[in-house]
Image (cartoon, rainbow, N blue to C red; front, side):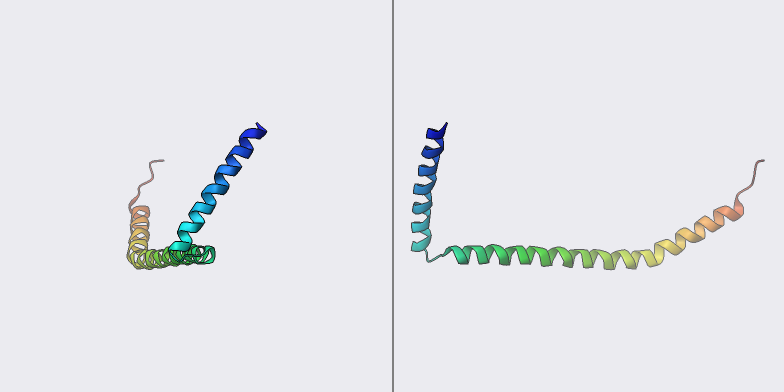
Length: 85
């Protein structure tokens, strides 16, 4: 069991060095990658709240028409209802 842990640790170390060399060749650093991930997360976060703002705006616009019509229909049904007691 412990032998397999050492084996995988060696494999991961070698792969990490290889990937590190390749990233250095392309001029990337770990800090640039982390900053890119942070910026991407910020854009996704901003788009999500923009979508909720857009959705809420249309919800309010529709509610201005739908809610009064619903109230009128409820009051109308209460007025025209007959009791069968």
